[in-house]
Length: 182
Image (cartoon, rainbow, N blue to C red):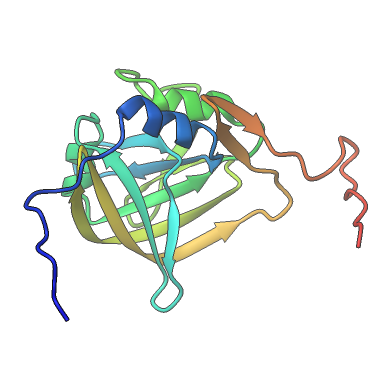
C-alpha cells in the first residue's frame, strides 16, 4: 500500500461571498453574551452558540478578533449567554451595533452576585466558566462550562436568517398552543 504525498499548506477555501451566501440561508438562534472582566460590562450579539458536550456541560460561541468586546472576553473568567425571545430584536440590534453604549438605557440589567452582567427580561440564560479560547481564523472560539442556568419555557425564540431577525412563533397570539399533528 502506498501513501500519497500531501501538498504543503492549507487547501484553498471558497470565496468569502459564497461562504456568506451559504450561511445566510442557515438560520441561527440569537443570543447576547455579556462579561465583566473588571473593566465594566461588555457584550455582543451572537448566532454561533452551540452545545458541545452534555458531560461535562459545555457550550461554545465565536467572537471576531476585531470586536470591541474581544479584549473583555479574552480577560474574563466567566460569561453569561442570554437567549432572546421573539420580541427582543431591538436588544439584539443594540448589542450588535459597533460603538453603542450597550448597557445604557433602555437596556435593563443588573450584576449577578458573582459579578456578571445579567440582562432583564430575556427568555433564558446560562452562566459560564470560560475554559478555552481557541484562535480560529479571524475569530476566537470560546469553550465554556455551564455552571448555572435559567429558562422561561413559555417564550418564543428570535432567529437570524438571510441578514434579518425573525421571530419564531410557536403559539397563537391568544397564547394557546398550536394543534399538534401526528
